[in-house]
Image (cartoon, rainbow, N blue to C red; front, side, top):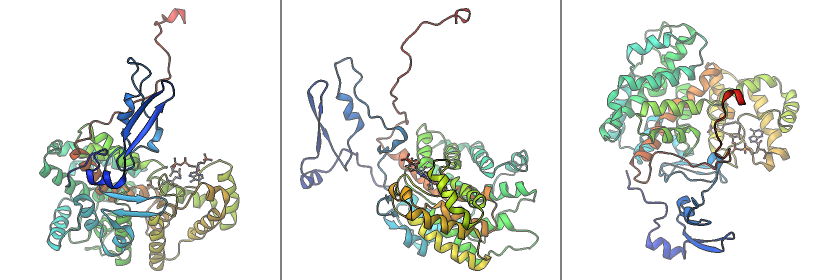
Length: 445
Ligand code: CMC
């Protein structure tokens, strides 16, 4: 992994090329002037601390709820230009990876920084494939869940439970140990997901088939019934694998931030991944794909779309699958997802909800409310339709996001651990509560 350069350590060459790289701040309360270094278009929040009213003052902090304009790390994994609708993993455009790569190769790229050679890919695939089995005891606590338990709840619990099976995972600064947990996590996520799904149906668990591809084996663990050997439909297998590529990483989103935040306490990667999975479960994040499908079902027909959009604009609810913190243009993943939808519909038949989705998009893209706020379809808008056509129940949709995102989470976690500038994540607050006051005995309140 490359050594990490500090945010304010622009090289001398960069500094001279770009002119004076500082920001001058005048504090109008005191008339004092401060010069703060700029690097990579960023200032260090700690440089604001010197701005004080007097020597007893704590110093200035920056206030940024929801981190809308705060870089929490330096990263070399994923690049997004939200205005231009660009997404790249380690420099490679998502469109090229979706067309030419496969999920395990992309996971290697995200984690290692480079595309693997043939031999590296073979070894990587071998190791992940040979870590797909889970301890039999995990079946016992899966059995404790209600038949209608949400699979994300089962995933979060069982991922956290993996930490109890692999105490060696606590050795987080040991590269070999991290690699082993990486194989395990990427390998076991589909198995946990498959088992959670089969539990909800009351079907016997289907064990991994190491002869199948990553996506093919996942389909096997979900849908295998009495056949001796499950053979995935190649179009569906490829479609799922491509969707996995699209979901592999997305820089500092809510769940990646959770992974880094929780991991910064130096807990084991299973516990941190369980936290990231919990973050992903929310309807504003990875749970949105589930909400989109419920929304399309509720709309029910193309004719009812205008009325629904009217209610969205009146602030009754959001148009799920629309909008993004970073993309202020068409989400490049959504474009690819639309193409995959056509391929899947050719095999499985056209999902009738697609017409409602297309009408939502058509109306929204012309409507002032959405245009002004730069709200475009995001990755979740069309994925649900594909998943539904492939036979997944809606509750499995966020799980289909969590499986591939695991490689991104681990990459973000490892980058955080190896960054000498990172410490335990611990934000400041602006306290506006009560001043000190004496305790009042209960009889006097
Ligand atoms: N429908 C209607 N209005 C919206 C929507 C939407 N989907 N998204 C944002 N807005 C409005 C919002 O009400 C606000 O309006 P106003 O300025 O009048 O108050 C404005 O647009 C800006 O929105 P915001 O909430 O400040 O934006 P944000 O960056 O905090 O939120 C978001 C981003 C993704 C949480 C939000 O767009 C949203 O809730 N979308 C629906 C849920 C969704 O599809 N989530 C999946 C995200 S992509 C997959 C992933 O990475 O998880």
